[in-house]
Image 1 (cartoon, rainbow, N blue to C red):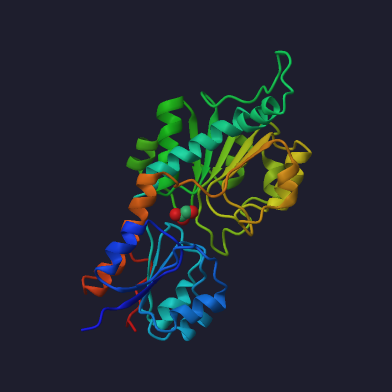
Image 2 (image 1 turned 135 degrees about the vertical axis):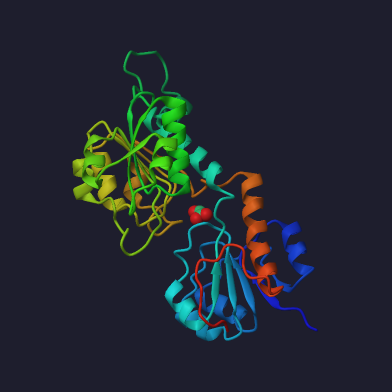
Length: 327
Ligand code: GLV
């Protein structure tokens, strides 16, 4: 019997592609070419499955150009590149990579918070530019992490990981806002108090965003929300571009309406709003929150395992939808 045909849409670990070849007829993309939606659709025309990385849009137009496609395995926990309703209606299953990246991403969220509050990249640029000629009492004075109030918007697994690091490691007071409140046990474990979004923005010294991107979370932080924050506050976005109105944030940073921001994700990435590139009080990283070698391997392996389990008839391991009938 012929093997199912799958497309690996971006370059991933070669040995994991080799593992997939044991089960499938694989077309991969070792040169990591960024295909247009039309090029992706042409490659998917004869494929049964695809491994995506979060930057390939799977929507109704693509699904109708790929009539054999049955499963899309995202190598990411977020899956806003999937039009889940269109996939479910077409009988196409989607999977993501939860859990395997939680602690790594929470580590990074905390690192970005510290780098932002303590002005690490701004001061490094100053030093590298040869401007450091003397010590002064207020040189790159930032804000404290320990003992401050941490506000987390989005209290899923990664948000909880950040809360625990803040509460247990740095003695922070943790407040959070989420679509639904955590159980009393989880709140106690995270030492976190549920508050409304407005109260969180008014009281937190540091605001960290970890909400999934949906039409409802678009511009969770815009000019109005930034205006509620303390002028000494920092904002960290490790969620998705589009959760923050980047143009409004650049204005708030330039006018020092908030002290600083740390951003790992951007509206329209990999293009970054030009005004964010010129304000000094922002730490910018290229969407690397889950980027450690063991975690990226675990994500790629989980995406591969989802494809293997699906075509073995065992059902996917971490589905994001449940079509009533499959293609
Ligand atoms: C990364 O952004 C992910 O969703 O895994």
